Structure formats: structure tokens, C-alpha cells
Image 1 (cartoon, rainbow, N blue to C red):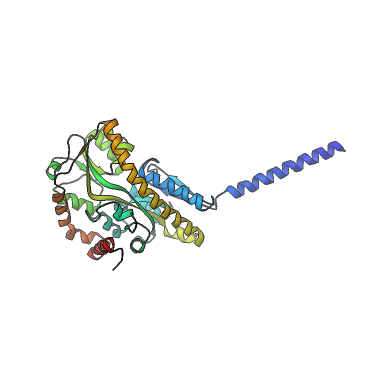
Image 2: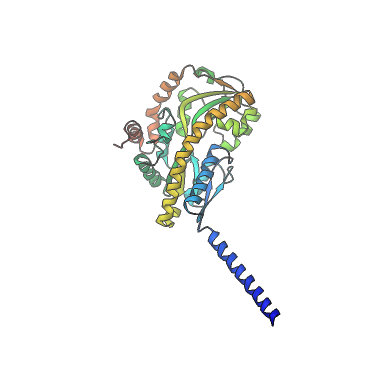
Amino acid sequence: MRKLFMVAGLVATMVMSVLYAGTLAAAAAPRVTIKYAHCCPPDHTYGVYAHTFADKVKENSNGEIVVEVLDGGVMGTEQAIAQKVQLGTVQMGGVTSNNVAQLAPALNVLVMPYLASSPDDLTGEGGLLRSGPYRDELNKRVLAESGSLRVVGGFTNSFRSLFAKDKCISTIDDLKGLKIRAPKNPVMTAMWESWGVSTYPIAWGETFGAIATGVVDSFDSPTDVILNMGFHEHIKYITEATYLPLAAVVVINNDFMNSLSEADQQIILKSAEETDISHAKYVAENGARVREALTSEHGVTFCELKDADVWAEKARGAWPSLYSLVGGGKEWVDEALHYKETGELN
């Protein structure tokens, strides 16, 4: 009889253990899983934003919402990622604004050369990409133009720098003869043409190979890609400029967002806002670290732009021809300038 009770007790213990383990598993399982795609490695600025956002969502939802980050462009080019978010095959993405502008031309306002004079104009307090009246209006326009893309966050990777394999770019005349890769965006193409340059519209994922094999010998992007993505093997000259920030938007499929409870939506918005703020600080601190590493460890030379006023005058002179490429035209560009100066919409 005693042995029977021992067996019964053992069975009961096992049953309770299984039930308890099942309860823990059920409690640990997320209610919502969100796929977030971006172009770059986890330690790249875009990856830092994505993983910080994922951590914030997990923290703010007590683990009930999980963001699965798809690093390294596994979902295709940035334009492909934007299209996948538009269709809902991927729920979210962090994508450079010029590559979402194909679906929402209002975003081309962020590509207007010399519209922003510092990263703070975009991601500082009251910036165009920070949560507030301007971004609310931007989101409204992007949603109307794309049909399904909703802007929930924004960040930069500072300004684009000019890179070359064989020489410093110190004046506008130094652009002559260079084979320059640039994104396929009509506003950016017009900017380069104002400087007398015809660019090669090579996809970002193909740029390293194009530089390595000599298809192109120059391109522009934030400085940290040279360090983080190994371009320092071929790029030896960097000219830091202020003609165009690398502005990125965090977009979510609007139907997916609306399928969530109001509480879950607020968690996503709160997490994005917290990440926007912390990431702006990260970018500012990262710039000095990257420059030091490139010069001391990889022999990269930083060059000074001697005629920046000439570049600015020519690029701004092209603005009238660019208004038709911006959703909302001159009125929307003027709205951005007004908000930047006053912190208010017209």
C-alpha cells in the first residue's frame, strides 16, 4: 500500500510539474510578434536602432510583444523592404527616406539638399523627425500617398560624407572624372547634376563590389559605413560635408497597426519615441569614435571642403526644379522650413 501511495505521489508530482511548465511556457509566449527589416548589420547605426527598439518594446510590454529584427538586408533592398511593409508581408522597417519616397513622395522633402543644417534639425528636440506636429503631418501625407505606410519613428546617421579611393575631394572641381555611385532618387540625382555630375544608380547591396572592382570609385554615405562595413579596404579619402543628412523613417503597415489594441499601439509609439531620443545621442557620440578608428587604425585621410558655399549655392539653385518631385511641392518644403525656424506649422 505504501508503495502504491509513493507511485501515486510521484505521478501527481510529475503531472503538476508538466502543468506548471506549460503554464510558464504559455506565460512566456508573446501575444504579438512583429517582423522589423532593415538594410544593415546589427552593429551598424540602422541595426543599433532596430535592436534598441526591440528591447524597448519587450521592456514596455513585459515581454508580451516581441520584435524580430531581420538584419543585413535579408528582405532585399531598402526599396524592396519599403514595398514589403506597404504590402504587409513585413510589419515594420527602418528605411532611408529617399528609398521610401518612391511610395510616398512627401518624404522627398527630407532629401532637399541643404534644407537641414545639422542632425538636430531632424532628430533634436523639435526636429522634423521627432514626435510632434510636423511628423504628425508628415505621417498623414505618407499614409495618404502610400495607402498603408504609417510613420512611427525617425532617426539619422548624421550627414552624408563623400568617399573616394584615390584622391581628396576638396573642391567642386574635384568631382570631375569621378565615377560616383548615388541612390536612384530623382531629387538626389538633380542635386548631383547641379554640381555637373552624372551618377551611377547602383543598389546599396552592390556598392561594395562596385567599389572593389572599380565600377565606381566614389560614393557618399554616413562615415560609419566605411568602418562598420569594411569599405576602408578601398576607400582612403573622406570629405565630411553638410549637404544632406541621412534621414530614415520607421514605418509600420497601417492595417497591422490598426489590428492591435490601443494599448499595444501606444507601446509601439512609446518605444519608438524613446529609441528616437536615445539613438540621436548614440549617433552624436559614435561619430568621434568612428573618425578616430579610421585615421589611427586604417590610414584613412579626412579632407576639408574648401568651397562649401559654392556647393550650397548650386544645389539650392536647383530647388525650383525639384518642387514637382516632392509630394506637396513648394508648399510642403516651405512648411518644413517654417517649422524648423519656429517649431510651429503654418
